[in-house]
Amino acid sequence: MSALDGQVVLVTGGGRGIGRAHCLELAARGAAVVVNDPGVDRDGSGGGVGPAEAVVAEITDAGGKALAHNGSVTKWDDARDMVARAVSVFGTLTGVVNNAGILRDEAITNATELAWDAVLDVHLKGTFAVTKHACDYWRSMARGGHTVDAHIVNTVSGAGLWGNPGQAAYSAAKAGIGALTVVTALEMARYGVAVERDLPTGSHPDERFVLR
Image (cartoon, rainbow, N blue to C red; front, side, top):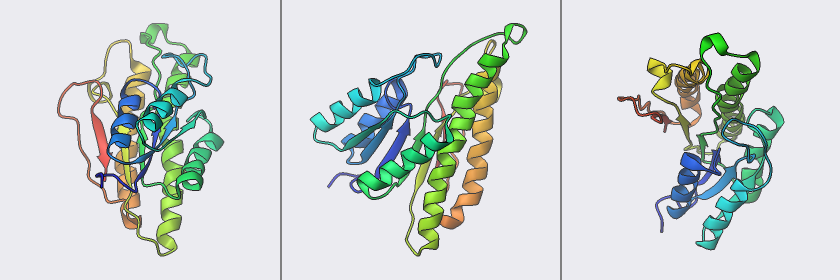
């Protein structure tokens, strides 16, 4: 039996980079994985079928279980559907990795409202939207008498603690995710989402806060 047999984990931004690595590692350890990725470029432009399906193919070819989801974390209904699809296909949801993000680096004096809104929408709103719908599901399960042992991992960054020139929007979004992580931990412990906060200790760009 693998370490994560019976676990079902939703990974946003799971088609490339760190998200893809999360998906492959989770599947290798026995979890069923919902790979969410709308297929956009690094700056959030474009989009379409592709990266999520490619990761799902890697997982299933290796004997694992996975499902592609092409919705955007910035859309409330898409975030709700990610959770609903995990439950309908795999019977439950036990974890979320909020990893989706884009970059539109601009100095404050050159910043545009469009770029600011786009970065905050994907990173901060997107993390909240998926977290909210997952937490709704876990709360309903707990109130229905079911035992809940759920986990959320929110990808943050040293930029959210110390800032980074040219990344006002990205740094602000990551700082916001850090605060959101703490509040989620405080509110969800009563519903079986046991919480431990793992604070960044260095300046690595992809440190994490963990809810367990």
